[in-house]
Length: 311
Ligand code: CP
Ligand code: NVA
Image (cartoon, rainbow, N blue to C red):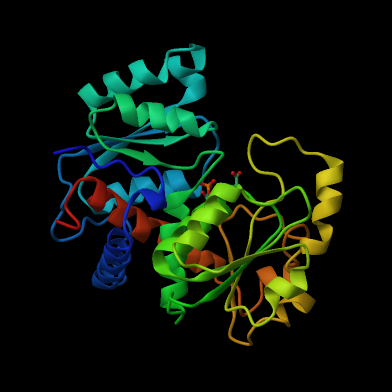
């Protein structure tokens, strides 16, 4: 049977994503307050090793995959580009073939999306996208889990995005098409998401509003989301920062949303830039639930990639 890579949410049906979320809810509940390093009773990935390859920085993705593998009974190893032969020009294709002989799955965080596609083309073990310049699917499984935990049923949900039309937004748009929620995207002119993601979400039945008016996006929204104005690898330009200022998620913007709306941010946050201090620390902010949920989401993604889920 072909290897189950996890490159983008849109590659899989809604059933796969729903199975991951349901499994994450069940496993999270079953653990209760168990110590973080304790292995789940069924240890479904016992004996398996995940290699995590980083060409960019990470805190949450790295720690959550490590703890997820530990809880599932497996182990991990980390390869940083700077200290491996990748940093000296060894090809992704050769790295994929070598790692496939040595480990059971590969997670890659990289810049150009074509690199993860190349890794998947040459690997004979599952390859998981730990973020590229184009998408961040693992983050969005955690975000969907967080929305559901906070009482938001996905179909018909009004999700509003503010700021840069980036990799995280692209994965939200893929999820919208699959899970049938709507997305209002408020960005400055010139910082819109890739229209391929917008068109795909629309053809899958999601309503996607593109606007330069943050209030229009926030009005009666159920979920408000933002992210850094300058993603890893992007040029930190003064003009971009200036254009982003009106898109800060602050108290006055939140006041246009539903009174029970929640605020999400994949983190790391730049408080005072894309989000104000009062919103970040306020009662509607669920950003640390969201961060914790990276572990629970990662476990389901791993189980899916290893063909334990969704059989
Ligand atoms: N949200 C997220 O992916 O965080 P890290 O960059 O710390 O992994
Ligand atoms: N858009 C951000 C997400 C970080 C988790 C970046 O790519 O840097």
